[in-house]
Length: 325
Ligand code: ACO
Image (cartoon, rainbow, N blue to C red; front, side, top):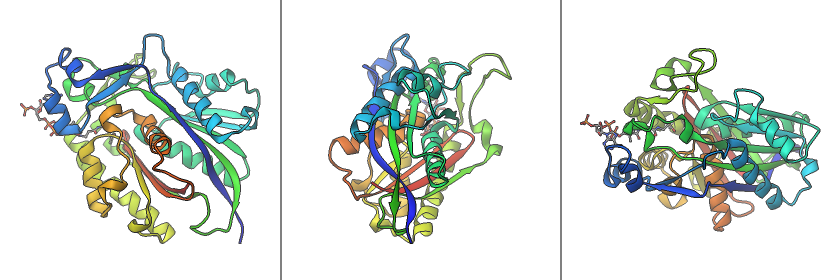
């Protein structure tokens, strides 16, 4: 039986020019390269230049994805942008990208699910496409997360970075089997009771300020490994596929130790895990498409490969998505 599939036709990404190493950070807060490397696997992160906005990063990534997919920009009928660091409280940063791309048709909106944002946005794009609402969607994860950091708090400021990644997702036809190209299954979750473990202590309705990231690191770590492994199991059960079928695991890049523990828990060999956390840090909603694009550029991910995405972030929110590229 034929079925509509949401096919990833291309991807792109962008990192700001400025690189901040752990040694650079050690000049700002009481930390060391050894501590950060050992606890997180992070060696450096990119930081947006003054005046460089989330929409600027998003636009670079979007243009790269459009070129990679080889589509006419006017084919795009939906822009879904995952971000926690919008240019303005409103309008949605996606509409700024829409205008910069010269688009006057279709819908553009932001999704807020913090680090899980891209998995949420891609799942929404898939749902739109399968419902006939969209034929060609631009899905972006973009963050200037450095602007949410308290640069005097060494427990958080060492973890994050800025960047953007994007995908073009097009409607296509499949046979309704796991051999189809496109998104095969997606599973989203949230649990708002755990808000206090990872949140920003400000906002338009509460303080009238942007606020800073606050986190109970150990608690986040503990929940992350369990939730991510469960979401991955859901994707495997829904498709009937096994861990051995997965060609590439592209997880949210929060922390090397979380990724190692997750891979071990589900029995995935380390060589199948795409890891960019050392050079990118945690770029929140941008991390999954940034890692995906890195593995595409260096030739690891090829047409027909089975790719498993997952993410977990503030809320808590988490989810997994399986696609055949
Ligand atoms: N440099 C040096 N020392 C530090 C730093 C730092 N940057 N940060 C904390 N410390 C100190 C603490 O003060 C503490 O000192 P004490 O023992 O004298 O009190 C000591 O290091 C240990 O602190 P812990 O918080 O217990 O360290 P832990 O081993 O848990 O590592 C970390 C902290 C890296 C944050 C870890 O808990 C973690 O990775 N958690 C997951 C958080 C995460 O990834 N969040 C991202 C967003 S959510 C997501 O994307 C999944």
